[in-house]
Length: 189
Image (cartoon, rainbow, N blue to C red):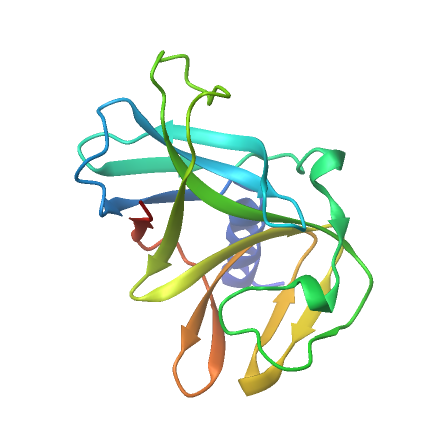
């Protein structure tokens, strides 16, 4: 193997081993308190928030959020079913190339009123919608590789572990890799 090719393979292996980090700003957060946090949560098939997987403080309207290295807890993993995929751009018949376990995630903002760095039961969750260059950002964990296809050309090939991708909602639902570009998070009040 030539040296440039070996170096490229090493870089790819290193980047795959590092945790995903999202960096960006909160849009619509004008009324958020100084103790606001942005959290990554597992989501149950019903859409209800499950477990907080990671969180970070929102400082001056900006954040840096790092994903966990490990898989989500087993209570957050469910069989991936075509009828349960509600990602932007997924319409029509949905086809899966394999049966896998998955963990869907959402971002939420909450007021960490007591400053303990995690959400307490009395702290309300506000929906937060991430996007990069007006394209929705999707994050999902899967137990093994799977390809998901749907109408309007939607096709996402996911590797085992955490996957983050963007969906262009133009004439077709084109999927592209998330490459670390800054994101904006809209907060639904």
